[in-house]
Length: 121
Image 1 (cartoon, rainbow, N blue to C red):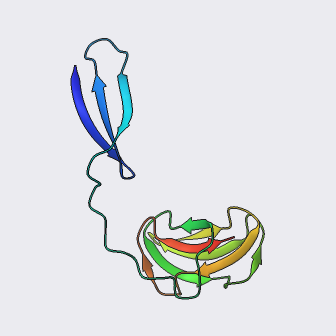
Image 2 (cartoon, one colour; image 1 turned 120 degrees about the horizontal axis):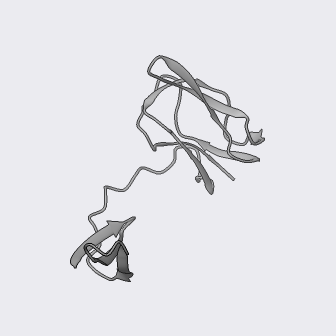
C-alpha cells in the first residue's frame, strides 16, 4: 500500500492505494491540514461586481473583437468576443441566456488560458 497526500482546489485528501489488486483508491476523505499557499488577491473588477457565470478563455491568445458590453442581454450561443490563437479566430459564445455583468478584457489584450473574459448573471 502507498499513501499519498493530494490537494485539489485547496482541499487536502489523504489517499491510500493498494498495489497489484486493481481496486484503486481505498480511502479518500478530506483532511484538515494547512491550506495551500494562496496567490495574491486579484484586483476588483473594473466595471462593477462580477456575475455568477464566468466565461473563461479556453486557450491563450489575443482578443480581436468584443461584441458585448456590461448590461447587455444575451442568448445562449451569442458571440461575446473573438479570440485569436495560432492564427485562427475562435468565437467565444455565451453558455446560457442572461445579462452581461462585466467584460474583463478589451481589443488587443493578450490573455492566458482560464482568464475570466466575461461574467454573466
